[in-house]
Length: 121
Image 1 (spheres, one colour):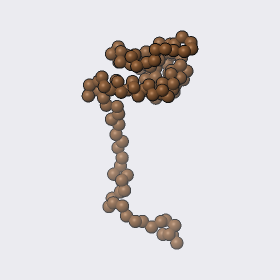
Image 2: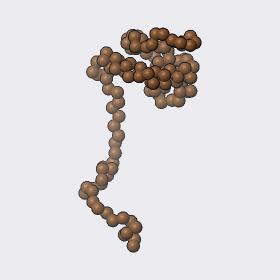
Image 3: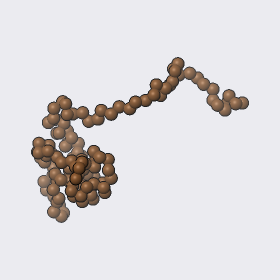
Image 4: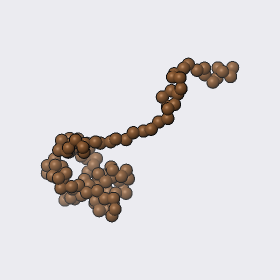
């Protein structure tokens, strides 16, 4: 399927060391596949239930994201990944928003203007 995201071996090596190793409950799905699904959803902006099935069940992907968020695991993953990358790849977001010139108050700067109700009276 086009547009899939898969973690590289180098990235997975950093993340794998930070994941919990003792699990309670049913047999776990492949962590690398699930994390790739989480990144796919976050990058594409799709709904959790619309995540492609190649990453595993969408409920598993959603639940894993929530559980690890509550534990603060994502902060540790992000910190270790940003420490292991070069300066060129650390940019998170370079979005800029173009606004019109009048968005900052218009020509002539701020002025006191009479309220429309008082003008009509």
